[in-house]
Length: 145
Image (cartoon, rainbow, N blue to C red):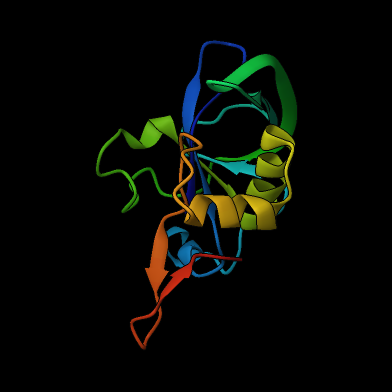
């Protein structure tokens, strides 16, 4: 699972946005999450237009001068309570497929997914990080789709 801290919809609603791989979908009683679909128990309407800052790396840190808008289909049929709602209300959470998350990161940071993973593994602070899962032989691996 991956987390992009906050995404807004332009109408004052803010979400903690999570990219979920096929392993994590079992918590939603599904085999997979559809590409370009936003899952949240609190969604209304057919689509949501997420506004996500486009980040540029400059001397002294990260800046954002523009927002990218990504329109996703809505699916509110997931459980209102998930294991991911430990630190925030479930209504503030939204979930997307790993493939959708990967595409957002590449557009948001203007770098490839492989470069993001390398730099994140090297402890570069993007303001969000991949949450790692452990394999059966206890080796650390990035969660992936």
